[in-house]
Image 1 (tube, rainbow, N blue to C red):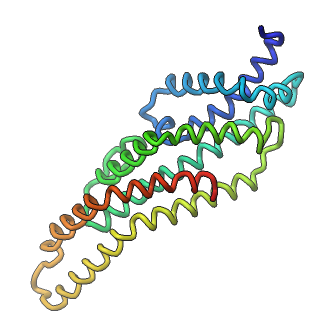
Image 2 (cartoon, helix red, strand yellow; image 1 turned 30 degrees about the horizontal axis):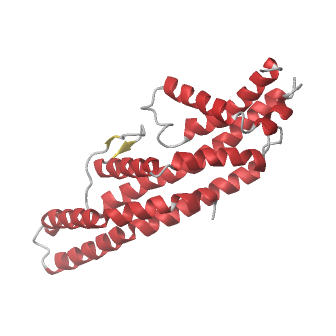
Image 3 (cartoon, rainbow, N blue to C red; image 1 turned 120 degrees about the vertical axis):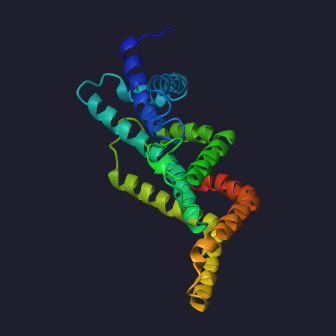
Length: 250
């Protein structure tokens, strides 16, 4: 039986602020293709599920608070946004890797609407980004995100002030680690593109009257697609294995 309905509602809303802000920015669920009502109901359901587990961390900080409750709400939204951005940066890094692969193998088609983002992307970049997101969900990365939200109440309890320096350091470290991981994944395609274009340039110097670029385009595209086909298993395996170290900051 609920003995303090007002305190319970305030505690639930405080939990919703952190969890809802995270779900709003996380990859997949934070996509514009997911209706806002579904995102709202999922965030409310997750908040109601985690509130009993985090009751001793949330309820005492919100009980009897009047003026300072707005500060708690703002701090909770910022903390949840940082956690969601850490996961989103890793998802956006794969789209950057897809654009790099498209450029290096000559798959320079006209950009179109992305699958999970509003920004224009090539078909290959959209395919790689959506496949990577699907693999992360299949490997229960959303469980890791919910676990991080639960652990954040120990590291950053309700009522504590938001540390912008810690948030900026966390986000910058995530960008650095994500870029390093994506650079390792796309390195075979970068090497392939550099070697092929260097060879084509040397041939063009030997026979400048032949339009070598237009003749070589089908060959670099075919070789790049074969490289992606045979290396896609290791590519997405390393991408999925790199999520947890990047997310945990290890």
